[in-house]
Image 1: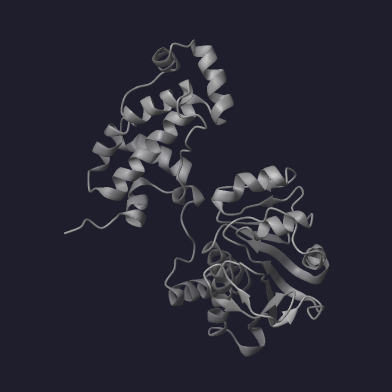
Image 2 (image 1 turned 90 degrees about the vertical axis):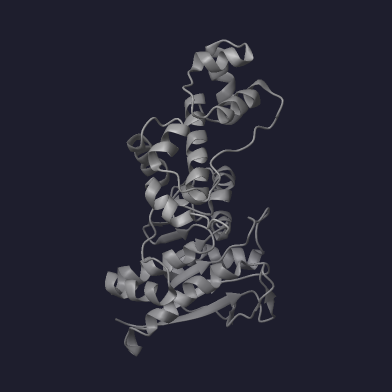
Length: 324
């Protein structure tokens, strides 16, 4: 197979790991590949002047947008810690708009998806970004089919990855698709990461958001549920807490939060269980009972469906060390 030309687009304030992660994957892959089958990675930017990444590291592009006229096998637009509020530089935007013609595969890491969106490349495509910015991406580009819980997504020639270290997952997936799972596993071992991460982004994100008005009836219900997460809750019992009818509560709750009361209760139980799993060695049966799941089997089913991992797997990944 011929050499793979990879370009990563950078700009001021870029997230350094969005850049270094996939580049390290391709670099490590080269140690297991023939020289004629290697990856050649370059950085592309508007100019050759040093660009300061969000963590302070300075990066210098190998090619300017004007110089990067040749075809690439893979082009990835790196992201920033916060999504851009406005369209990127017109020269960059025009260059990105031409990605379908200048590359075999093209896509983004983290909030780089917003740049693709401004270039019109997300319409009617399945995409992802950092869990914290997925809702903003869907709102700003309503034609995009945002998948907020996926680590990375491939839709035809378009590839997008979630935040920061997910660029490593994407790079490993691309290496695996081209050179096989065994090569991807070797690269993952060299980088001391897993070849295929279990679960989705939900396991890394806070599952509950605070209500807009902390004194509202909806906020009082949320506080009541979280303070009594192990109890049984019905629409009628919750409505009684704030003196509303069950029908009015259901309608106002969805209007205020975007989810049903039942959905909120399940999320509250998941978050309570997560904290117990992270901070204690309590048996799964006790955690499940205290958090309102009823049984360890029921908690396992909910965790697997919601987070993509079992409670045991979650504890193994996020257990905090107990101070001596």
